[in-house]
Length: 369
Image (cartoon, rainbow, N blue to C red; front, side, top):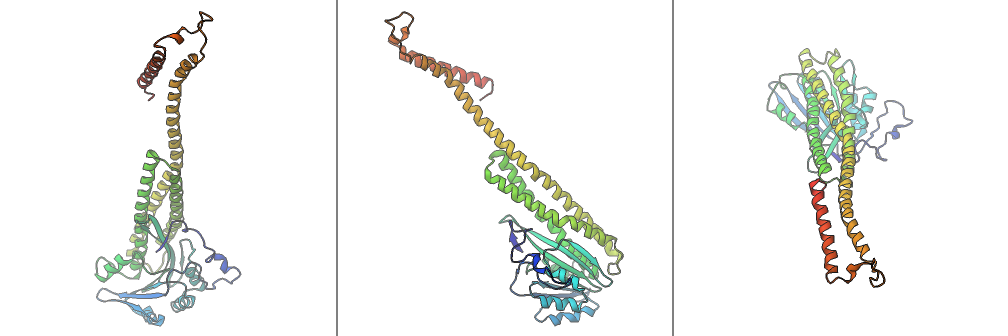
């Protein structure tokens, strides 16, 4: 997966969609970042009694599986070799516009249904717990009569548990057809959203704790990052609800009636993800208000302490000012007689100490301190 916190949802100058400007519709052009050195093609072919997994070195080697009665999953890692992707798409009868969409990694989740295949674009997310980042890439899926094509931007994905289930003949997947495999791949993508949301939820809890205990300017940057993460997930999930809903309602001979109930379950999972994303967005939106309130409360506490000290020193300053006037008692009986006292200086200090302590006791009883 491509690691990014800042660059997700953005376009680099090297992979902008504008490179397609002026080209006729259906022109195959790779739009996106090159995330692998070579294109890797793997073939997973199986039925209830047979299992085969291999990596092919020549693209023509996977063409023989298009007409086999068994279920075949052909996965392509790497989209930068346009001619190879176009060759695969042409052999399996994909429309030029579909090939164009596969090569454009800036697609929003979408679905196109044709007479002999179904095409879906998804965003595959995973959470990097060590760096606290969301890793994402685009996955394009094509469901045919007895095959599924998956196009990814790079090697490494979240489908290893599914491959293990197929290899170990666990669950229903080996007994079902390509439509159930198609569902299982989408299910893996959606279920992994929950892991991403768990990671974001932990981040939100940490930021909330720091907001209450010790809000710092750096906390605002964390809130901003969380806001971008939630917005990015929302842009991926909301269109997916429409895609899964249309897939459930569409009457296609490629999807058996027994598989539709599982697709309905996918829709329920998508709604759960959307609800969680919206909840997190509301929490994150309120975090800035919490930050401002925490900073304001902290400032109020500081000002309260400073005010109390200022109030304590006001009478002390007054006393010091009175006895700092130094009028001569020999010239007038109304001048300060204390200036000639033997214990005048200790008396003034003691008076200041008594007033200060009395005010501190008063403030504590009032619970101002």
